[in-house]
Length: 132
Ligand SMILES: Nc1ncnc2c1ncn2[C@@H]1O[C@H](COP(=O)(O)OP(=O)(O)OP(=O)(O)O)[C@@H](O)[C@H]1O
Ligand SMILES: [Mg+2]
Image (cartoon, rainbow, N blue to C red; front, side, top):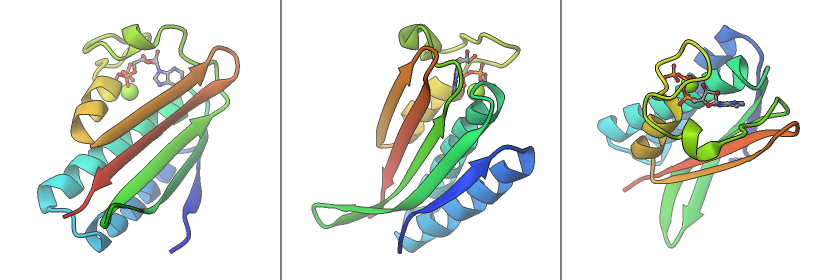
């Protein structure tokens, strides 16, 4: 199935992205626990795209590697970027009024995590969770 791209502009978009990720996670036979981890991770990143990135897109799809199938989600914005990634990835660090657990928690919930950001250009975060 071709990847799908969703706008991340409103709170309700986060709900749609959660649903899309759930369907994909079931298709590639993630366990119930892993489905929940991937959905939680996607929610956190979608929320960051919305709140800090000023909105953007989420692209979701199935991916294959070495006979395994997984769910991938890419969150992209053209917001301010993250000046200090190490700091942003620290448990409990927030520039706003959050808990500062979104990025650090997300990295622990998924199998693959990649963050690309440039000040004044934007932020792209890619996550993958592999099925059985
Ligand atoms: N897409 C983004 N664009 C710009 N800055 C970002 C983006 N995502 C995260 N950040 C920065 O990284 C910090 C840490 O993000 P993280 O999701 O870990 O915590 P939070 O959103 O502040 O709180 P929480 O997610 O726990 O409610 C944010 O406070 C923000 O400064
Ligand atoms: Mg967050």
